[in-house]
Image (cartoon, rainbow, N blue to C red; front, side, top):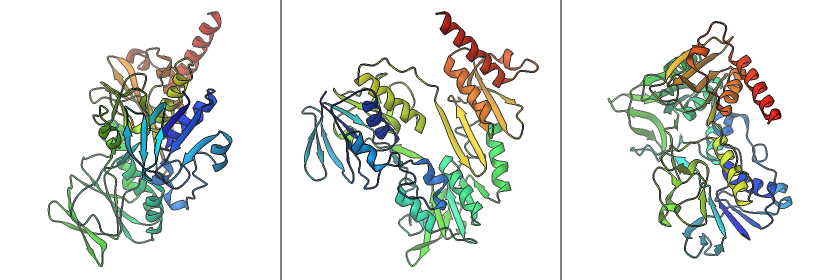
Length: 410
């Protein structure tokens, strides 16, 4: 391979470029970004938008990194087409860019609500730095904000707004927040916290449209006819993978660009990583941790290094003072057990009598212990976890000691 082209400069794309150099790749690396800013961390956009974010403060790497590592960062450059047969890209400028290996890290984009009035000023969705700037400029103490969606983004934004003195209302499709992602017990803790923040939740409310005056939103019309007056609307109803480029090139897609265990797509010399990729037969995972791992894994593969051991998926969210962390992917029929935690909350999720996932709120030591246990692949049964005096942190430390001793003996 003489040239590797990476399309998309989010967490996955930048990490892939960096890891290729770390693993010893000495050919050309072209990192193509449609955005004109330096590639940046996206989690702060919804968690810290009111703190005066700057390009430099949230940059994934300083500008000098790309020059030092001989990575050509093409900012403000759109990719219009992939010619998989000829192994070429057509850029927005009309220029052709050849590749030996292509890595698609195109990420995801916000799902649209698609109702009348969505073009009004004062309605925002957070996906890029410009969105965060627009939202920050709308924060005025004493004003009203209406958040559509009680997922991660919606709750994070609502908590920040409430802390800044904005009266916040959330429209939730389900009785409890994040109920698609977390267990009922964890969702109830979050619901209580939202009430304590002064955030009102309207459950089961469909948004029929937005009303405005002088091109600016003034209210949200609900499906039952109610009108909720507001000066600001934030839409956070999930994301869809950016697969159009791959689909147009003839790659297999289905809620993501389909890849095999080696992250290879259906086209020769094209891989996909991060939020846009979905493992055949599996689920698409939207997380920084997954994007980073897949980037490191593809770099190791391209450089002929040993494959990385898969990590247990993990996720996090900052909702006001709550640090929500999850490891493993919970299933609806998992058996859940609440674990006593000082000043926090922890839920163990068991599948076939074995630990499969753990949710924590303000209980980082439990989260770290759970990751160690699940990553080790050593089963933890319900009988052990239910034993009097069980301590998951101590259990993880003992397990780590046994694994280390076994490695030394080998």
